[in-house]
Image 1 (cartoon, rainbow, N blue to C red):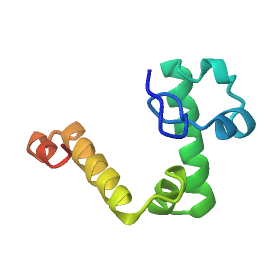
Image 2 (cartoon, rainbow, N blue to C red; image 1 turned 45 degrees about the vertical axis):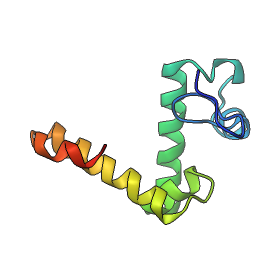
Image 3 (spheres, rainbow, N blue to C red; image 1 turned 135 degrees about the vertical axis):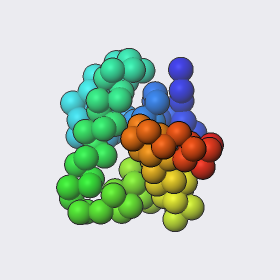
Length: 95
């Protein structure tokens, strides 16, 4: 079970406050992969809609994360997106 330094839970590293107050997740279910990914994706989408920027949303999702974090996430996203579109050679960039 994934637990962050500030006790965030699961793959999407949900905080208790965000999960329970903003997303309606029962905290005991935060380790459930389906619940966790669904809640994390909904929260990220909310942040994108609020900021009108994927980069700003990522920074907020990560608690104000730095530019390096945003760059790493965007690089991985672009690599995975390219692979899904058939450009397997782009995968090496992500990892």
